Image (cartoon, rainbow, N blue to C red):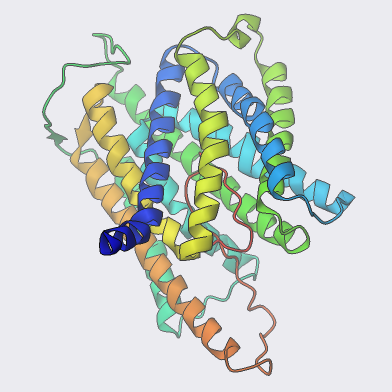
Length: 374
């Protein structure tokens, strides 16, 4: 019994991360169902943060009773976090999902380490270091990821036949979109998904700066949810003229926004923070491809979506690029950590500051301050 208990204890972080990725997968499918039901995408985002605030604010007050004093600088950074990591990225993400598929957008989110690395190099927050193995790995992973995204967007290929459950929750009509219209949707959706990755990257950069002065992950997440709620509500009020869209009944619309706000923004935030604290920053990112697999299976079996060879090959390349970038970053972190154990005499050179970011999903918006990896 003792050995079994030890094994189960060791597997606990892995099991938690599987639950987290399953939760993210469910979020993508519910977004698709709510959008297909005719719910305004902007109102989905607004309600998501409205439901998240009463969960995250009490949690932050309970867990982090001792916090640094809030300053105007921190509030401004929280405003930017709410914009880039909340209102803007989520609106772009859902719009892309509505135009393409949950599988497509889930695969594209694995480009976040790539966009983060590119932006960090341009902003001189991270060195290219092409002469080292770590630098070459990150550049190679970036190229592989971009190639996978292009393949995912521009190549369709043959349809992959899977067993049928005869379940179609989105009720596809008999009249499909024209080839030209479908191609336009894919291109526009890909652009929105990539832009969502960029805005999410900007959030990660701002959040990394904010965490130095305000190292409270739960409070930071709560502040971001408050700011995101305000921004999303203002945007929805300015753009959505149909007031009936704000009405929630006992249907998929209420389920979607409640699930997104309470479960994804609330409970999964706690689980991801716990896993990162136990196993380290790279651990959570390893499980990202699981969400793509779960979403692809569920969307094909229950939403009547068609799976094509191009989608599989593109997703595989994006995931491969993700792992290559993470491997390079891991090697870089080992190299930086090794001298630090020798004593305080080691010092970092100007421009060696790197952004540490744990990439989970734009759905999660979990804020793991100073424990994230690019």
